Every structure is written in structure tokens, then in C-alpha cells.
Amino acid sequence: MKVDLGEFVGIFVEEAREHLDAMESLLLALSPNRVDGEMLNALFRAAHSIKGGAATFGLDEVAGLAHVAESLLDRLRDQRLALSADIVDALLVATDVMRAQIAAFEGHAAVPAPQVEAARAQLSALAGPVAVPAPAAWPALPAEAPLAMPPSAALPAPVVAAAEANEATEAAGPLAGEGVAFGFFEDMPEPLAGAVPASSAMAEPPAASASAGLPAPSAGPGAAHAGHESSSIRVSVDKVDQIINLVGELVIIQSMLAQHAQSETPQQIERLRSGLDLLDRNTRSLQEAAMAVRMMPISAVFSRFPRLARDLAQRLGKEVEIRLEGEGTELDKGLIERIVDPLTHLVRNSLDHGLELPAERVAAGKPVAGAIALSARHEGGSIVIEVADDGRGLDRERILAKARERGMAVPEQPTDAQVWALIFEAGFSTAAAVTDVSGRGVGMDVVRRNIQALGGRVDIHSEKGRGTRIAVRLPLTLAILDGLSVACGGEVFIVPLAFIVESLRAEGDAVRSVAGAGRVLRIRGRYLPVVALHEVLGLSGGTPPGADGIFIVLETEGQRIALFVDALLGQHQVVIKSLEANYRKVAGISGATIMGDGRVALILDAAGLGRQAASSVRLPSPLESAGAFLSTEPLPA
Image (cartoon, rainbow, N blue to C red; front, top):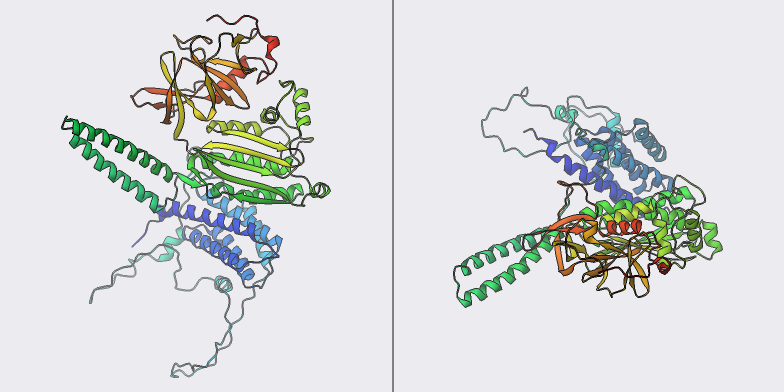
């Protein structure tokens, strides 16, 4: 029976990547001074699995490179070869090449043949020549001699390692009259007595189907930009069982409510209300269980940084130790895929700008190897990811001098938070020279923009000579949002709770105009730019700022603004619906949701409103010295 391997392609690609990730992690944990036999065995098994799977799908180059790596690992685990840093480097390069080959199989750019051959040659050179023992001569036996072996007889030839036996078999060439194939097979039923065997001419040789291989998928639109994002996740059976049980409970409750709804007696109405409460609890539980299915451990992101730090440290002439904490912390798969680039830049920045050279660290009384710690933890409905180093820390005076040199708006007596926020400005860099690693001022502004696009924020804590800690706070999921519903111009809007500091009613003279540049609100001696929501969105019937409305203080991108609305309605947990599939991007709006009464409410983009306030009110933010710019008359009501 011929088996269509096409349905197994996705499984092969996913498992191959898992094996390559495992190999990379094991190689980074290996040390020439502390060889672990179990780790070498695990590496060998991973390489062997990749070789077998690649051969099944006709990926001969992948199988060949995996075979050479397997042979080298076999010598290491049999202690016929000593582990060295060069061997680890060569095996890491081989994993990179195989990963690129797997991507090419999916339709991405092909791997240049010289790159593959260089990786193979490097492994072969380190492994040394393969000595395959020649078989011992067998004594001639009479044609009719009985077949027997004494119990004490020794084997006539030495036992060779599995990898060497493979190489000896391949060197001998194909076996005459034999077909060799890898594949998926099904057991066939035993033939009936007296059945006529099928003609050999009708049977397809196994080698024919295997040699043809499986064509790689054609590159679809945007394949070059698709990257390494997976469209599937592995889910624990316990999570699926929990969802099934909750769905069953909902069916029971629905049946119960339908029965109670047929009667209007007080007792039945009370039971109906009780059933609605139960339905609400079960619906929330089902929602949480369904969201848990999308949750993945952040180790999927953290696992790539030891390799990145190792390679970059070698280029920079530094030594680094990566520490990972909270790897089991879970967050939404959509966040996992979009947080990789910002965290990668933060790690590179810590290694390049934060950690000192070994000589500088020794002179400062620090260990030669710098430390970069990545940690993750849950705090309420958010996840906090921190990247910390024990390097030189941020230089406050140097940052301020650079900002003033570039003509940036800087408060007269800025707080540390305001100074650190300057490094997120586009094009800002204090690097003395531009290198291929950094120095152009491109990156940190993108980090902040990407984090805010996910509904999160970035906080920096730094001490000169002691190090820097950057904390990224994100929602646990992109599908659900905790928000405050507000009314403005007869419409309902949702303000994300993560950006709200406080809400208040202003005193009569607290709102003032800035000469030719908008309005500000004075709160406890500080001046905040005012953003009137009805003016930003062009709504009619909104309350003028300073009248009977409410100010909501939002903190975003290192500054605070005062958002003016007509009224506060209440706090809700809402399901986010994207608008971009059907509508163009609207400034100040990030999405929409459906309220309990069926109305559609727009979700406000707090970061976008903050940027709009910064551009309209031409004063330092926060406005520490705004008094000189303020009119003496309050705005009319």
C-alpha cells in the first residue's frame, strides 16, 4: 500500500526544529572541562532523528550533514575524541545550516552549496579519518559441513560502532538486487491459504518511491517574509479535557434555563437568576480555559539568547554568563512570536553597551565574566519580563548632554525616569563609534513602539557602575483587555486600564491655555497636556474641558497626559476585535469591542494620544516650568 507522505511534512518540520533547538541548548551547556555522557547521548539521538526524518522526505543534504555530525558525536561519546571549543563551534554552525535547509524545504531562500560543504568539511576534519576494521578471514568449510557454533566461540571480527558500520556500508556502494528505503509502513494482513501471490511485476519497488523524494512546497506570496512563525501549538491533554468538561456544563445549564423560562412563578424566576449566575461563572471559566490553550512557556523565547550572547560576546571580546529565571511562565502564543525582536535587541544592547571589557571589569573589582539575567513572572493580569546586567549602567550626564546637543526638549530638573526615556527617541545614541552591532541610534525607539503596540510599557532602572534593569510589562493575552468605559459625545469608548494613573474633576482655574499651543491641566504643582477626546475624534456635543467632565491621567512613553471625557461608566473586561481588516487606521483608535448591550465601543490608543499631545503642546513633558508660558486667565466654561 502506497503511503502519501505529504500529510506528514508539517510534523517532520516541527520535530526537526525541536531537535535542532535541543541540540543548540545542549551544545551551549557542554564544557570541555566537564563532559556529560548523558548530554552527548542526547545530542547523538537528536542528530540521528534528524538524519532519519530528512532521508524519509528526500532531503539528502540535510541527512548527509546530520550523518557527519552524528559520526563526530559518536566518537565523542565513545571517548575516542576529546571535546573542544572548536568542536562545539562546528556543531553549532551545522545546526544553523540544517535549520536554514529546513526553512528552504518550506519554500524560503535556498542555502548556498558552499556553505553546506564548508560545515560538512569542518565536521569531517575535526572527526578525523574513519578507521573501519577489515573483516577477519573465515576458514574454508566443506560444502556439507553441519552449521554449529561452540558456546565458547569468540566473535571472529571486532564489534564496530554503529556510526562506523553505517559509513562502511555506504562506502561499499548499493547492494545488488536490494531496495533500501525510509518511509511510513502499514502492516498487511496475512495472505489466505492457497492465495495466488501478486506478480512481482505489479509491485512498486520501495526504492522507487523513496528516491523520488517529496518536492518542497512552493514559495507562496510573502514566503520570504514569513519568518519562523508556527501556525500550530502543542496542547496538553489536561487543558483540552478541561474545555470539554466546561462545554458539557454549559449544555446542562442551557437546558436548565430553557426549562425554567417556561414558568413565571417567583420560585422559577429566582431559579432562572441563579442559573444565569452559574452560566456567567462557567462562561468565564470556559474563557480562561480556552485562553490557556494558547498559552506557551516563555522558554520558547529565552532558549535562543544563550547562543546569541555567546556568539556576540566572542565578536566583542567579552565574556558573559546568561541566567534564566521563570522559564515556565506562560503567555499568549501571539505575544511569544512578537516579543522576540524587542527582547533580542535589549539583550544585544546590554552586551554591547552595558557590559565592560574583561580588563575594565577586573579594574572595577567585578568578575571577568559579565552577567545578563532574563526573568519572567506574573503580576496580576500582566507578565513582567526583565533584562538586567551588572555592567557600567547608564550615564545620566552623558545622556543629557547628547540630548541637548541634538536640540531635544529636556526639563530643567529632569527625573531619572525622564532621562532614561530619552534613549528611546529615534536616532538617539551615545556610542562613540558606529559598528556593525550598534551605534546608529536605531533600535530602542523600535523596541518601545513594538512593546506599546502590544499594549505594554517599558521601565528602566539604572545605577552608574552597578548595572541596568529594563522591565517590560505586557498583558497575558492579546485577545482580552481590562478597560474603563467612558462616555464622550454620546458614544462609548474603552480606555486600557494599564495606562490609567488616576481620574479626577478639575477645579475652576486648573485648566489653562498655553500661548498658541493648546491647554494644560495643573495637578499638585505639575502641568499635564490636555487631550479633549471629542476634539481629537471630531465628535459633536462633547463637554468643553474645565466644565463638568472628567480628566483621566494616562502615563505613556515616559510622560503623562490628561484625557478629558464626559463621564466614567465602569470597569470591564472586553474582547478585542481588530478593525484593520475592514477599515483604515484611525489615529487614537486601536480596536473595538462589543458591549453587553450589543453596542460597539472603540478602544482608545493611549500611546497614540500621548504622541499627539506631545506634538500639539510645545512644552517639556511633564511641564515642570510651564508657569512662564501660561495665560493668566482660565478658559471659559
